[in-house]
Image 1 (tube, rainbow, N blue to C red):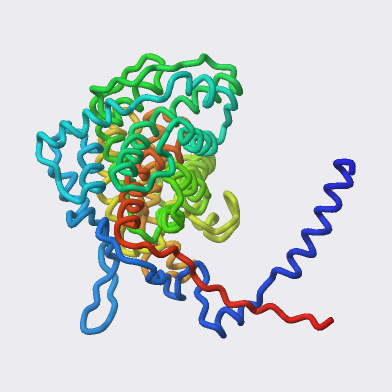
Image 2: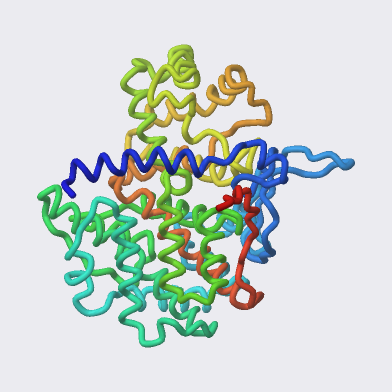
Length: 444
């Protein structure tokens, strides 16, 4: 069959699939099925228990649910408290990773020891970069990383062993290796597709995860203390976010089947790369670029409001009516990660001479919720989420957009690992939800 004939065949079959696979909306209501495992108020179906993290978006007062400023807790600590406990230039990714993995805060000695272990594990098998990463470079760094994760299983003699000590060892190694998989994957693509120079800097075991990432990414290996601190903070804020997000739930589901660590993390990666999950900050950057092209004065709130109104009314940008970076599936009044991150973003903007851009972000943060409430009649509260600023930060750090979702993965691998271990310890049942068949029986 020729290519043109095949395309025509698929086009016709797509119509058949759409006709036979469409289920009437009334049936979901009739049987009480919650689409996306969420009710009409956006509350998730309770699917399990966890002691790793907690998200608070509302309080129940006198039997009535009332929205509150969002809270994010890691192992009993509020995220603000964890970040405040770090000294001004202290980089805490490894320390907080230990907390999430082990369930307790390390003392200074344990913290230094764990950081050394992470540094010592930050290496790849012999010739892995050449034979795996450079062999099939791709602009889709998440796909490149996922392929690398699955291939790493071939180098592990105990790849399928789900004993907790072995899984913990595998997880620590993957946490250590993820920055290499991301940076080397990008440089391989940049060399092959963009015809740029091939750069392979070896990691420095004495440096933190954030420092190593910046050092390995940049040709001159240089970075400032502010850059490292802001990136370290971004990684901590993205490290974990409850068990109900799509990629963490994927981790739980695959773990419950008895599958190995590499397959589990690869599945989580495949979930995260979806634009509804990990790719949100890229859409924010695309939107901001469009706004800059149509707003002449970033400080003129009336002009900014006018163009935001056009976006909301589906007259501008991608005409979806969405102001990307605004709103969250759980938080309403505020996203605690955004509240914390904003101060670090402002400091970096000052260092980079991007104060004017930061002012534009602030104006959108102030104006968008009011305009969304006015034109979309959404009154439950719309606030900026962490993705509103994260793309801006990565841009100021010179991180290419191909790596944005990979940055999320470098952070979230910690949370996935913690949930995998908790799932293995707490349950021996496979996660198997029910689907009600509404199929019509065909009589022969």
